[in-house]
Image 1 (tube, rainbow, N blue to C red):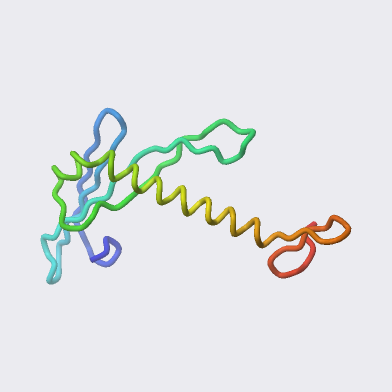
Image 2: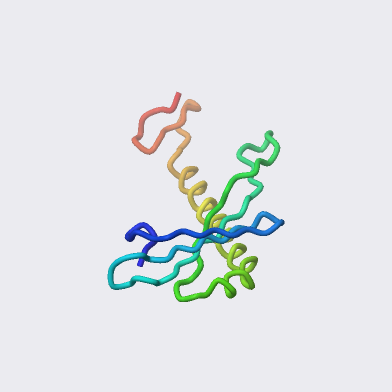
Length: 118
């Protein structure tokens, strides 16, 4: 079940360190009463090498079938795993973007469509 697929009651709790857990409880259908959890943290991200890091919100899903107490106890481990997966995806996207841009004779750069980038 996906949080986007059903109507749900939403409850949110947070601690003083800025960690937040959102609980979704399905309110209709055959999976009524099922609870799903999502974690929220603030990440420091550097969007440009010459700019200072910025705080951006980051959300991740906890595995299905877990309880609120489990989510609270394992919050840091789950958030670290989610951040690592996100960082790897960002690195892959940057490498892919670099491969699409190809230098040609005369110093011009070609984009993915083969046309010069001006």
